[in-house]
Image (tube, rainbow, N blue to C red):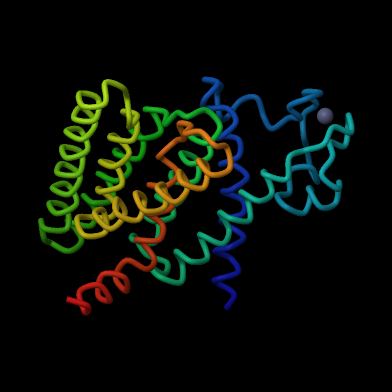
Length: 256
Ligand SMILES: [Zn+2]
């Protein structure tokens, strides 16, 4: 019981760091320096201001120094990260896999928010995800004394990347415009490294279904089709696949 609370609190603290990443990485700013400050009055935050969630509630969502409203999104992301870390702990425990999926969840949150804000999946975040994934899979393979733990995810990453790469150029060729962003292609390769083959295909399926629904709703509301980022749907699909993929796949296979 205590350890799940610790996992959630740890996630909330990580979430407050993710907020910094989401805000600064697209601007090309350093994520470590300068320290956290109000984005309106630039006043450095210290002590109580830095406590995630609580400081937001205590200051009623306003900057202590200039009174500017602080977006509630910061707190939502902290809580979301906390809940995801709790879920990762419940499923994988305090293990190498747990640590790997904690990093994975953090990557998905940052990539989703930046894609929503800027329609962009920064290459250096995905590259970081690839490198971290390769290291985790390498340690796993060493620990199990078995190459398949490292080979399958790599194979999945290669195939998913190749398929999406073909899809990307196919769509460009057929539609004479960019359907998918190239960032999406890289992202799918990265997801596959963490999810391996079956869950990656489930992720692609879930993402397509969710994005189609969203596209239709957008079309009905706005009365014209508008481009929207695909990354968030891939990431939500990946989270569903990570936690419920086995159930969904065995249910589906049971239907056949
Ligand atoms: Zn301020």
